[in-house]
Length: 577
Image 1 (cartoon, rainbow, N blue to C red):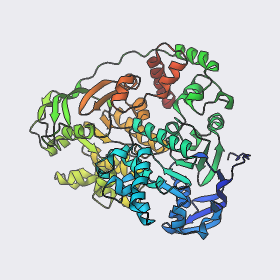
Image 2: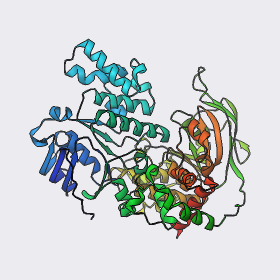
Image 3: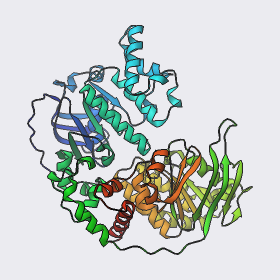
Image 4: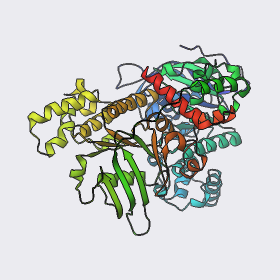
């Protein structure tokens, strides 16, 4: 384990964990062990760790959900503002720590944006004129001042988060706690959220704690320290520059920034003085030549043989109501055995396109061809023999309590005999790594395993095309890699895979072909590298240019997109090795 360095500072600690341990009553072992951590007034601290590491439990201890909502045994000391939290009630703690939850919808109370922001002030019996003034002031800070009369549920993901942020800030708390603020946001909106958090931190001088596993996205702006949690213990407590040099993140199942991985591939030793904690602070003079040499040494890949087109959209248009077209004249071709990502902003039409392909909704205009055959008039059942759809949340798909019955359900509905069903189910479970759990209840599985059950229930139907909506949403790096390598193995078996995703890393690493939809129109159809190195497309579709591209430009590499492609090819070879 990494030793935690002593830090000298004149600022008083606002949060103090001392030999802190917590064990949920429902668990056999403690979730947190011997936590010793001080956070100073006005600091911005990022807490990272894989799923199940205990990072969210730390957040719940700070905001009072532990022990007031989640019961368990506490040992040691936790002080907030110099006072033991065990001696405080949840109301007192809420005046010290304001929490912005991962799921903004779960935080809304008011029928309008203004009502929601005003909720805490109403509880404090603030006069109406003062309340209106305060709400307007705080809403302006988060750029929501003109939407006070809107319903929170009509807003975009980024706007919802801003309302949640304002609802916390209105109480003028000392500590702002953000629990996975990027989880449900597209890349560009996530960047805006980090900008907003940074701006409020600088202007208000409040203490800010961010719990997030998307490390590189948070390091787009400054943080004072990064606290790494692993198996309920503090594995590291360092500045970003120190942590990148420590080379411990991959071993703990946390993805390091892509530009740091690129430096290592080029044989550059990442030391604290290189200032690799952020791309903006990187000492470029020391690394330009090694990066150029590595880039030139990479072998160019030959073109692969072109395969037949399995799915083709010709001038597809669709609208739910006459007021607005959701899809406008969409054209694309997907070849047999490809892995394709469909990307774009929330509400761009990506999921609607998937529904059209599956036949859940019928295109108003245009044709959808499967191996050149028009699919119009085919029932959902007929299309399901060729195309399967896996939703983002497995709990919305699972119907049966037992794993075997869930996977067998589609075949039973089709009237297939039990003698034929059993070998098909066993094969699907084997492919999905679920064979040992054949007789288990679904409720005993983790979220990632449930996701595999939903995939197995589709695979058993032997589809040629598998569509997945956000297959890695909310997954840490280890689970993300497990799911994606599993899907890559399926793809190697000949299944064509289409993924709707906000994850730019996924898009780069696993899907050579990307289709970009913005406001119902296709604005990009090329390799993932070409899309994520095209600033115009990225801006229109709320994507984020990869840090590899920015690194190449800063290093003076003539063809930055070639550098990005070389990185992806090199990484694929490294994974295969």
